[in-house]
Image (tube, rainbow, N blue to C red; front, top):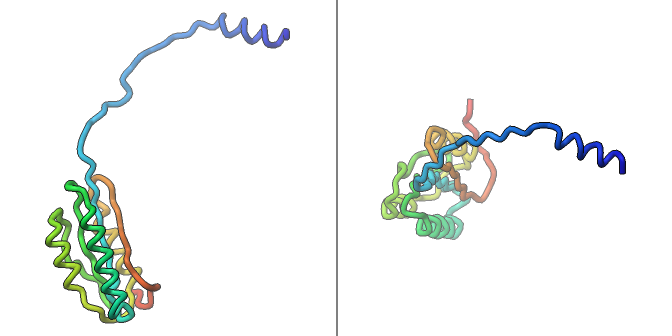
Length: 141
């Protein structure tokens, strides 16, 4: 009991200084998501796998907010930008519909391409991968 009283006594003997300051400034701005949808179109995706992937990608695009911006990266043996970043859902749907299965799976090259595409963007950066396998065509130096 003596220890508790001693600590209590010390607490009230130390003068407390309270300073109120603004440590931050709240800025309201719309949340902008920068999304890179990366789609495997390698030969193993021929038929229903690619058809199902296209449906999934289009369902994702359908649910994007008005402020979201997305790009479509396709990969098989090579990686290419099928649609640059846009908020236009019709353009994104068209890029998804135009995918054709061919080649091997350059998954890691697609990871690098998507990362480089988003790295300098402000706001949230999101990479969505739609693939059925692992890399079997790495071309990273």
